[in-house]
Image (cartoon, rainbow, N blue to C red; front, top):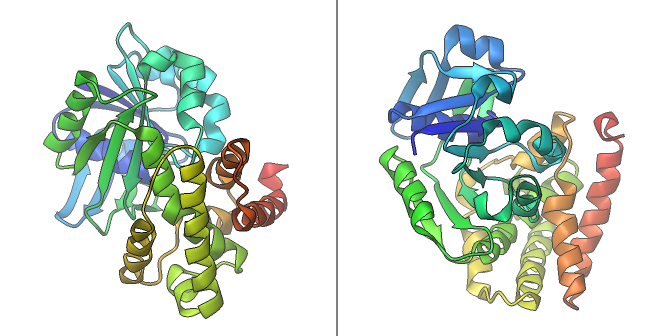
Length: 308
């Protein structure tokens, strides 16, 4: 695959798209607010290995301008998925695959509703990437990406996509169980994306420094493990301990949902908190702490005029 469309060219999409373009692939970016800046000044990336610029990236305001590609990477927030029926069809040819790199649960289902399950893949990004200004992406750590087929074990197509990422200098691996990997990602995302907001807009180091918030975060992790187990995914308690241990080195870190909330953008309340609670309940497992956090975040989100 060498023709790639990036849908949502913010932090995640901008970084991975730039890395793939730097490796010589034909990458086309769907952009909105950054379009004029990137067309004029290029797309800049700061990463652990140094800084680089894609001088004249192919960027457009509509997918009709981008045309059919081999691989579509959906990297915007799940709150924008209502636009998938409009943006995806112009990008498809007979063999196009669509990879969603979104948080929470339900993204693959939303993509599959538009393009079909056979085209759909999902991925999880373990990174700390931020878009610090128009046209500038900053990634302070190497990070990694895990990708899988939607409802199927890893395929030759998937392994080719992993190789494509690896050839671009991206640490990537395939999984045979994408659904379980999504629950593993929630072990960190549920507490730290949520508690930093619900506690008034504080960074992860302040959550850890507060005995009650630290204990709440660890208890939320246990509930995520319980929800996963109700759906047949066995994730050991040691994985939650690992996620707690890897957080202090991040320092005064602002998770992506906290940045969205502080900027007045829509929160991914349903995909990160609501959908896991509903799926666990349907499997007979109540998650009371996570459900309470979901209700709190939903109420806070409703105060944002953009969500009314």
